[in-house]
Image 1: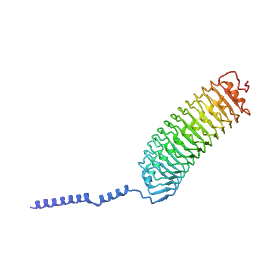
Image 2: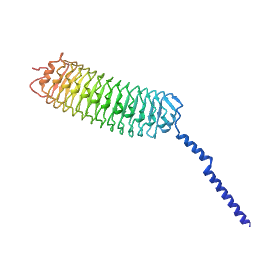
Image 3: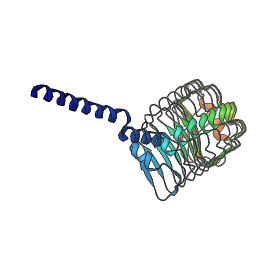
Image 4: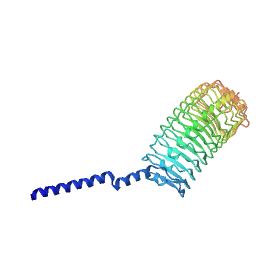
Length: 384
């Protein structure tokens, strides 16, 4: 009998204990709290913190969370975060008072920056190998400094920048291996500093630069191996600094430069293997510094330079394998520095003599060699 009572009591205790555990699992306070926390974490960010004073660098996902709720940053913002999974914590941010640098991300987009309308300093987007789109910047209308986009291997277009109009600083688009067009730049009307488009391997045209009328610094188009024309620059009338067109292997025409009347500094056309003429430069009347036409292996004439009357510093015509005449320089009367016409094997020396005869005063040091020997002797200056 005592045994039976003990067994009954043990059964009641065990069943009662199991009943308590089941109650905790299905309706306890712990799970209720967890559900509440989850709802809070995934809800919208409240944009109620105003301005963050000073600079900030994002290097971890928790750094992104630190800025959640701020609408502006007074100083520079640097996003250098290979480990970040998103930028959603920046969704309240409308302005950056300094520079915005976006480096080394492994994100495909910049969606967390979709409220950003102004950057007072410069914007640099560099070395983001997974980045395919800039659509997260589509609200950006004002940029006070430079715009640099380079070494973004998967970036195919710049559509997210389509709200930008004038640029106060320079524009550099460099080494974006998948970039096929410049669509997002179609509303830019002027560039305050240099304009560089270089080393974009599959870029075929510059059509989306068609609204740019002035460049406050130099213009450089180089190492774009698939680029066939410069037609997108046809609205450009003024280049304050240098003009450099080099190493564009498929470029056949310079007609996109046909409205430029002067180059304030150097004019250099070199290593453009498919370029046969310079006709697109026919509106040019002066070159402030040096004129350098070098190693354009299919160039047959300089006719596009027929409007140039003066070169402020040196003149170099060098290594153009099938150039046969200098008729395109018939209006040139002044070279302010040295004079070099070298290694143009189909260019008769008498052509060089004729050009020297029309220059007043005689240029500084004269370098002439390895052209087609036809009996004239330009150096020393003893042309018949």
